[in-house]
Image 1: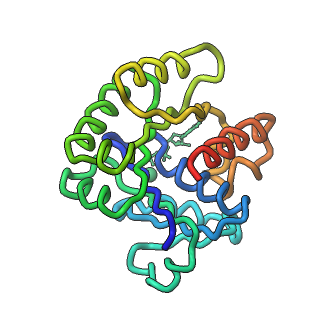
Image 2 (image 1 turned 45 degrees about the horizontal axis):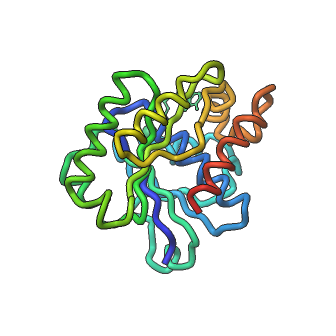
Image 3 (image 1 turned 90 degrees about the vertical axis):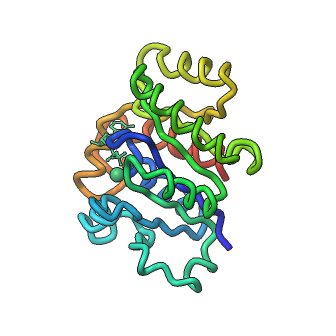
Length: 207
Ligand SMILES: Nc1ncnc2c1ncn2[C@@H]1O[C@H](COP(=O)(O)OP(=O)(O)O)[C@@H](O)[C@H]1O
Ligand SMILES: [Mg+2]
């Protein structure tokens, strides 16, 4: 069975779909058989992303109903993009299915607070401890200039939370990628390579 990575957050618009699409793309580039599952029923953003280009992502993006057990069993990794503001019950179910829950978060005080809340809930569910640090924060949309990302990472770690080392920085290449249905790696942008390097580093940290 594949390693299942679920990406969720307390808020919408934090960068879940961007992260899901790009991480899946990075795993695929590294030669891992990867499926991206879009469980954001309302918006379906990973699916829509992939639909914008003919072969934009180069990996299967599936709606939950299209996930056949056989197909899943053949994969090395499954990345699940979820809806924002999931109900507690859905979170609980997600934590049972996933090997790792990634919680993307911006570095603003407001976003960090709602991220802490979500991590508290997951820890209460035994996700943090029983699963062996199963929930991890990914700091994303981090200003490339300054130390806001490093500071947030240090503060969260001081609080005992697990934070990925890689900071996913804020670059226009991600928006361009979303618009064209591809990956930041493949857009024409001066920072495309740096953006992709962040994603590759994160993918190596995870798997
Ligand atoms: N690292 C990043 N750098 C720049 N823009 C980003 C980054 N991550 C996400 N975004 C932008 O933020 C917005 C919300 O991202 P999205 O992935 O759709 O969030 P969610 O799936 O959590 O709702 C989009 O416009 C997206 O292009
Ligand atoms: Mg989304």
